[in-house]
Amino acid sequence: MKAPKPFIISKRKDSKTFQLTLNISCGLPARVCVEWRRRSFQNFPDELSQHKYPKTKVVADAGAYALITYLKKRIEEGNVQRISSENVTVGSWIEKFTHIATSPRTGLNAAKNRPYSPDTVISYRCYYDNHIKNDIFCSLKMSEVEEEDSLEYISRLSLKKLGNNKPMSGSRTFAGVIVFIRMAFLEYQKKNKKWFNPFLNIDPPIIKKKPRDALPESEVIKLFVPGVLNRTMELAVCAAMFLSGLRRSEIFALKPADLDWATPKLTVCMAWQNFDHADKILGPPKGKCVRNAPFDPILQEAIKKLWEENGQHEYVFSWKDGSIPGSTWIYLNFPKWLKRAGISLNGRNIVPHSARHSLASLLEEKGVSIRYIQELLGHSDLETTKMYLHSTEKTIRDIGKKISDVMGGKEAAKNEETKIINFNVS
Image 1 (cartoon, rainbow, N blue to C red):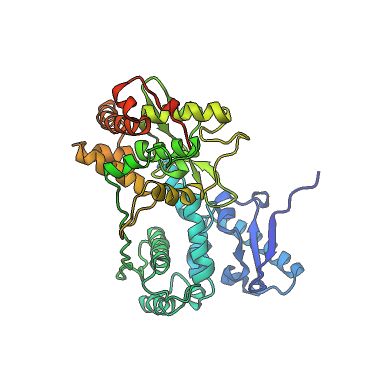
Image 2: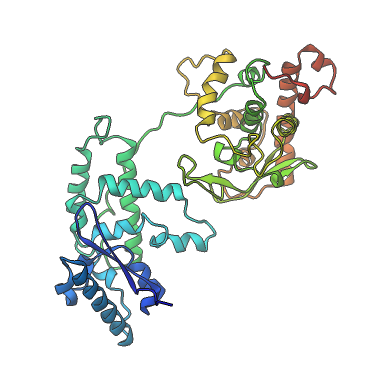
């Protein structure tokens, strides 16, 4: 069997320069291999300056072997100081944070049982590729960059135009890029205590987001009037949004094992990461904390009916073929629900996420503690308690009864035995 090559060399399409990745088979410690993942030859130590700019693959191979020999010698001599920390450029350091395997924050997060979110890494990669890597700021050494260099970069960034020809300055993207770079520089400062952080006195931009509005109880009930939710899937999803406070990535990640019919409650332990992309994966919910959510009778009966129609599959909210609704399903249907219910926005910012705001507002009006509301929505690390479930469940059941009355008409109000299972979708 042929031994694996100790390194991988690739060529960048944008600059035509070579990149090096050291494999564990090269004999160096794993931490050193991680540091030399997709690194430019220009990051070689000064002692190997003759290998920094290879013109051909053969020359690059020779440089890679020279680097391995050099690093092994440094380790054998007992000099374990990391070369990358001494000579790494701004671009190389920031790029580390765009890959889970190389990010200096990966280990820190893992130690706290808070794994990196793929969505976060994708955002970092987008910032780096589109607004950072081609700037001259990236060619500076981290050990030598000054506050003036940082301010000049911010000035250049603010003058750029976004794809819609809007100015970069004042946009959420502009704020995101600056916050990302400040985070990367702070991590470098942690590793180099005596180094002066050039972003230390530069505050991040403040972007005021348009607040999402909440629907009052009367309008929430309107959504469940017959003729608004035309399919059982719509009914079940809408109930999960407004009566359990689940995010869309959490709704479609629910599995039958997460449903406790006896208590009753939902266990929110998984959510789709990178949900808007084809390579979505299951991971922990936002906040990296498992939580319990109310499992109202309306949602219970809606799920039973959904399973009667489509069968029971790996995920609770599945079509007949076992597939789940796509990432845009709720966004496409939500405006239709509002229109059918006769709910006018009147300048309000009502979006699918407003369901969570609506639930929080309704609970607060009923006297439920803010602490428990935060726990219900997964906004903190507080553990779910029986007292919390009882407090929120009673209030949600009251709202659920009103919804049941509307859905079943006057007869439902008179007959408490009427269930949502008998609700005829239009």
